[in-house]
Image (tube, rainbow, N blue to C red; front, side):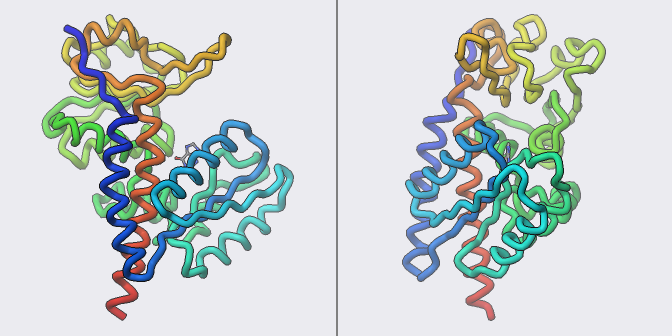
Length: 288
Ligand code: GUN
């Protein structure tokens, strides 16, 4: 078997074209969706992510602004910035790029974002909403994975999904979203004993460990759907995922490449959540 490759770049382009119409509709009714991005410190990867987010906003017609703080900034200054953005009607979504420098308390920062502007879905209220099936905003990376499954007509209900990774950004929300769609979910980590015993039983395998090519062909059930969330830079400068793409594609039914798989969908879902936040703010304004 040779797996069908799920092209995240192409899918991202087509859904962005669809959602551009939602932006246009909002703009016609006098609301330009707005995103504020806060970046603290000089992490080069974060700087690239933020640049890409700003460009994606501009391409689809979303207003964006970036608030940059130095790596030794005071937490209170960032909190003050968030408070001001919470009250700014031009801004519908607020994103604090992670990771933050060590002196920052992540939860203090994230829970200071107004719940209805937390387009990452990381606020503890929004995490609770996700856990209880009352989702306000779905975290962007797992949301992107769900859209990839849906748009490729891959059934989730009743299937065994194995998620490797337990981060708050990917692994945990991914597991909850699959569970919500009716999958039987197993959560593993890169340290799980006899990992292969779990992965070989996965109909849907989502890998988010940050360990280059840790999933080989022998770990995958023939015909399985393999979603690679990892993006790793090797010593020779090339990028690879957490899955050995060339080996696993000979066994899997579907597979996502790296780059060009899940990555482009993450930013796409950020745009989606920002549009959603603007639509909700607009609807609330009309009701009042
Ligand atoms: N850092 C890595 N991924 C993310 C993400 O999805 N959102 C934010 N805010 N920071 C990140």
